[in-house]
Image 1 (cartoon, rainbow, N blue to C red):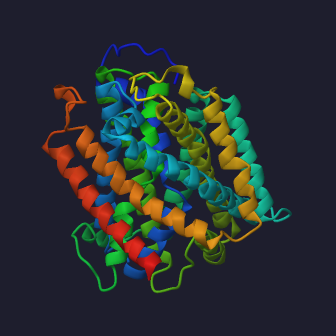
Image 2: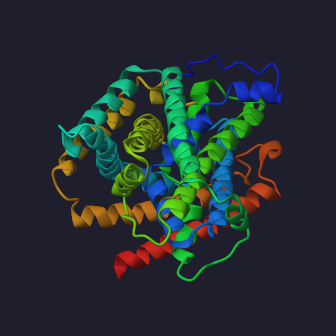
Length: 423
């Protein structure tokens, strides 16, 4: 991928210099945290109050650890994550290729439908289906014609809108800071284990985590000298989205405790209606705008980041065993594999907006999705402790501990999902 900002060495690595360059981490974390994550946290808050606050904190640390590992692999080894997987054997790139094609088809419909929900609530003249299709096309045009710098600025603005809407809603309902502080102590209320695992595994944990390294490359970060910038950038991104999730826990605990809550993206529409009933329309409308920002950042980030992953997968799969470190222009935002995957995310999934998801497709998507995060955590453990990574940048005990805990967590989640599908 051709960097859009000159890939020079940083003149200084102090905190001020690092914070001025924050960007890819915001994109990765905001893309990974969608409406479904916020609703899951709302439901947890409505059932258990602040008791699961500790699980959100732990989940944020886990995702921060994986994000740092992905970024460090790109900068320390000089290779992309796809080149790393190829070095493990063709099975790894083969699995990822099947997964990314199937995932894109199903997720494209999911993302467009999610963006259509708040727009339909704001402007009911068009149905959710057609608003979603419009958003998909808008995302395609922005990614097709835009450059990384533009996308980063747009995503940062949308994250600002999310922050005002989501955190503002939490302030509006009034957090119980004493109870929130008590939630730091780990405990498992009866029936809460599934929610704990979901909260720890769901704070921005998707295929988009693997796209982080490509955004750092687009930023112009290409050498190990940029690792301190990457670590600060990654931490800022996941701490920000952790704040979003905590805000939703506060809302669920204060506004919905002991009440029923719809699952899925429509749960946020239900929350908007309850805000209107309790505080007036002035509270509902800003929240719906924030809901739209949440869903559109996920759509836009996927349309760009996962398309970069696919373009590099295409290059790697057809490289005849070569695992060169620099993908060059063949996986850039102007390459035809990139643009082909953007079209794949946008056009074919529109058919699913008119139909229920076919049962077999849903099952295959769910099975492969359950296996991806264990695959990511496990392969990072191997790559970052192998001779493929220069000794100075290999994982130390802290990174290895976090990745090992993530692997265990994701394996448990995967088994739970697979057992659910079988039963």
